[in-house]
Length: 640
Image 1: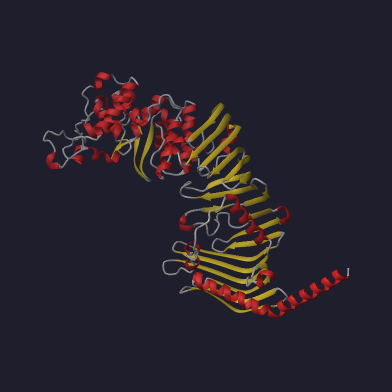
Image 2: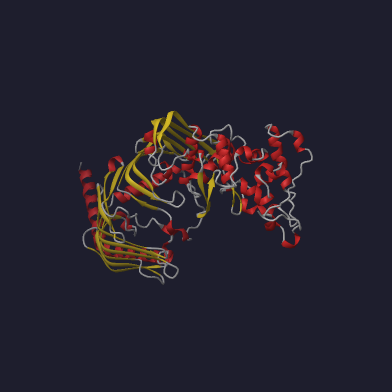
């Protein structure tokens, strides 16, 4: 017992000596840490760190005044009037200033990113070249654990900010945000964010349960209903606004994997991106419930995960693997849902022609997608929207059956309206299907959509091949559109290449084809009478006249094959001819493939292909666009 008392006394003396030494030399340690930080900023980022004063005002409490970050040759990036810091003692002994608490007042963060003023470039971490040695690749779980550790450390630090002002300016816009008060403790989070440029206010509140590694945050919008979040619209890209957001995240470490449970909900959520839609995509109510499982080589969204949009709920499963090869899998399951609930839950801004539609019956949707990036041709793609007693009670903004009668088609060249064309007898160039040479529709079908008569608007295999090819070439190299989809795009929708337009196109095609709103023959007739066949040439009536000075009923097999070949690029038809007005030899193989398909499908007799050559004779106005004026034959007919 005596020895224990002596040891205890000795330890007490040692501790007293250490703390006395720390107390005596802590100022020197602080200056050493500040000097080290200043040197690092100068060497690594060519930025000067200035403090008018930094001193201990308590045992481990530091007060620093008039802190400035000044990038070399640029305007001041950051200034802080006063900062009170509670430092961790052990790191300070090693010359580091790890924070246990921070209070700042009078913060001014001013960012310029213009050609002549860029005070953030020096701090661009992506430009840091000080790292020497191989980059060590870590698994997904290691990265998650590092992220969790940093989040835990940040949220475990008390932080109080008053009178914060953040401004940003580039060549496109200016942003100015003020934070009059922001308070973070190891338990609670509160704050106010004011966007001064748009007179907008966000209220932030949250909780942290460190023992259970739970984090919850709520953001309420109480200002300008039309204002977007600041700083997102970099180069006019992404914009976002909402009425209310809430997220609850829980981390859980298991033996085999790490798990992150997520429960998020939103009201009045608006998202805008030029790739997504022309207008804001609006989710009146949306929520996500799911669990991420993270191992060394894979990230998986558990199959019990769900996403809800207003009155519709879908089950989700997703998995990303990097070993043995990189794969991505996605499964979506929407249980049988009342059709009205489904259509009412569609995001606003994406399905304009469907707004206000009312239906009876129910719908169910299933999607299975799997791609092995080392073997894209093995891609799995199965998408099915199944109906039960589906009926349209009344149409919304568009009556999809209107093309059964006469109507006016608006021909666009990108966003420019070229002209309005009557699809009906009032147009002298309109041609009924039974008045078109039978060669023409068959040639077009074999070139564009061989199974048009039999499918319900979509070809799964065509979509699968299109996705695989686009992935391999890392660009949009091939589409999977059927004639039904091309018709819907031309007649009902804009020409925008957005996700919104493609999604709306798919739903309209589904309704037309699966409810029999427009007969197949009428769809083909309208398609042939509205598509572009050349520069400002629309419909087969105008095309037959433009190229051959004929009526559609007089077209030959070769002429029909030629017309089918130019549908993908009608304005560029002239490249298929030489200076003498003869089809180039390269078209011979195309003619051969198309006629073989027609023979196989019994729409062309084998004897009709004997001696067939890729030859046509231009006799209409197109001749002047192909041949020089001095080479035109003297007996060229006058234009009608």
